[in-house]
Image 1 (cartoon, rainbow over the protein chains, first blue to last red):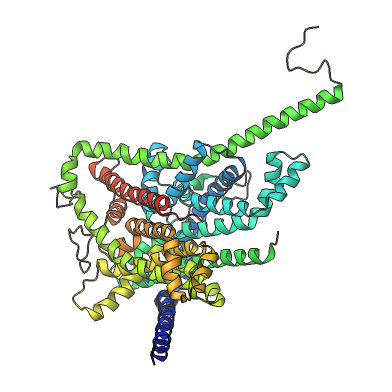
Image 2 (cartoon, rainbow over the protein chains, first blue to last red):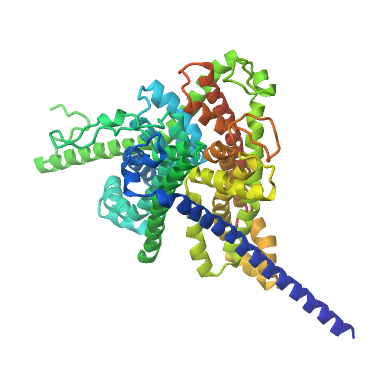
Length: 308
Length: 315
């Protein structure tokens, strides 16, 4: 019977299509698993190689020619100070740019140029920022190979991240809030200062943390401006007991940062230094993962709590 | 009484004129704030201008000493030796080979993950997988470099014992895995932006999920997927530390991923680590190399822009 034969064919067709569905679903899971397994391998590899070296002494010692005595004190202090400079430039500049582009900018070619430019900057390799900093900050402005130069470089590098996060946070604020404030006679700046900035704060914070996590692991631009790899001293302390309590000498000090210290140890042939590299890498991974986790958690809470 | 135009003090009561003065000062303040915010937004434009200025300025000096033709056609790259040769081809071959390996991993896997997360995955899997992928993209590249040199390469040597300790293959594979999250997250966003009604139309015709994904969703999102690929390419070309650590830093004109080779980025790092005096030819080479890299990524960005414009589907 032709009819039954057709039905059988159709059933076969449906079954084979469903099979394809399942095969693809498995492929997807498999592809995800490759990512998961790599990540697990990386983390475990770092932990196994590095954990035996990780101790209080490791965190409080300077680098040394003897691998067993070497530590990451100057590296993590350097990283923290550079991050301080980066944050204090990237956050105000990024938030201000975001507010300008969302709340103030007229629709004209200048705004178009700024927007296209930000998109393009996000795709520029980080080492190019290093070359910019080498030519401009280190030599043209005479900042030298200092913490200030490194902090400024990384600030420019993460500026697009902060701007994009700010704009997205601002865009999700409903128009009615602005209209309500304007109806009561607020000026543009009053609306921005009293409504837009506070309401977009968690979103901005998420972007800032992700940007900082990127900056702290960034190696290439800091090497390019000529950060030193062997530093057995700390920059002058930013706070002191006598007046004026804060000083800015540390901004011009030479420095090293965590990823550079790790790179230095990785490029040595002795196995003991490779262990140090793994330990430094483990600390670095924990730091960036911790920051990313905070950002993700913040965004998750934000999505749950805010209902306009 | 002569009245100055705009001066209303003669017709207004003291209270009113005070109010006018206050409004005027508020207006001035508003304008100042707007100007400040505008200047902040201009910083990013100045960054681009600064990059172009510095790269071009140093490269012009470089190309006065080295003819452009030699730069493009010489098959040796030995700027730090006494017998100097400046053939960018040598570094470019390393960059292209490692990028090719990375993209062969990142593009298929990234696309499959994007389709899976957007069209197949149950809610729970999505909620776990997305932050996880984000974390994978957040690991510092120097850590990936260590991983490529001391985990992936030894693993590959078990399969292929002649593989040298520094090679483009191991570095490229790890680079590919690093790039997966960039590709998958942008491609997935593009697919999720496809309106539900298109999928519903397809399902109503009796299509399966796989058919809907491949024949309806992917073509509709193709401009976004293309820009995800382009971003992946510019990441691969600009990646530095993985290659500086795991691919060796010997310039080597080769397209064989099993060999060690230096890339443009690795060369810049190598020079920056040494002490080259400011203004020497060696110092200027890294800017010429950087300019090459910049032009390459710029071409990618423009191609992405054109593709987005061209293939954008409007609903």
